[in-house]
Image 1 (cartoon, rainbow, N blue to C red):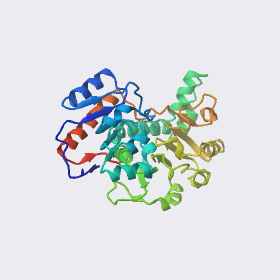
Image 2: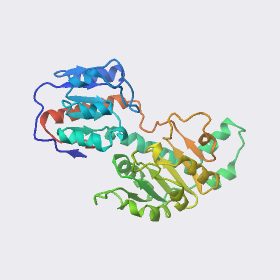
Image 3: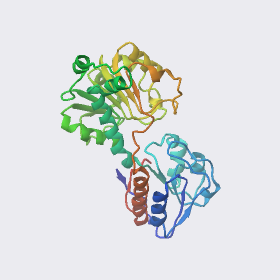
Image 4: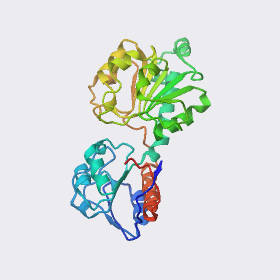
Length: 333
């Protein structure tokens, strides 16, 4: 959502620091979009999942685009706006960063609007695939090639009328609700502070256990933080509806993976789909890889062919807003 800027307009040219490792086309678009400003490019650049190393060039920047080192975000008084190339902002979500930005009227925005669509589509794809037993059929194609006609037909399910509980209600969850609408599923959500304007009935965290007991599908979109660490633990897994399916497109740290393995091995859950794990990459010998009915994708839910182009355009749109003193999109604090 958009949030008003402080009473200021960035009319003078800005120093914009970027440590995102962008493909050539996306970098060319960034250069063109910030042509009237000064672009600072450090030698070391990285991806969305790792914080950048401390960089002396950041000390000369008004705006950071990418993944700046958190300690520098706290200390550099000149830095007034940080725009993250990721939807997640766990490494910055602490009192030290928040207080430092607030003290100098600085802001942080993320790119959740860019990743909502692919993450929601990824979740829908896996939900449909599991209900239609596609992973099981494809494994047969790579294995014995047995014609499991009767077994797979009998195990297939219709999503119409089934219940979904979404943990967290940000941009990704909102788009999931929209994509699931044609399937006529019964959807509810929980969030820390329900706003009352959500697309589906939304309840506070205190109602989690009650809602888990009725859900055929539990979709975790929670961000990583101290408050969400192992939110899905043995106790909450035990309270899930027998035979439910669990999906994690939030952060791996929000799930007790040992407890999840037990829930799958004992049949408490019928399946789990994980796009995120702890650690990442998940080691080849980690038992999750061979846990029955556990399906893993390597943190690809947000990925798409135009990912970097869209991230740059999202930043440039917010830069235009920043220059005009307008409301920024996807402000986190």
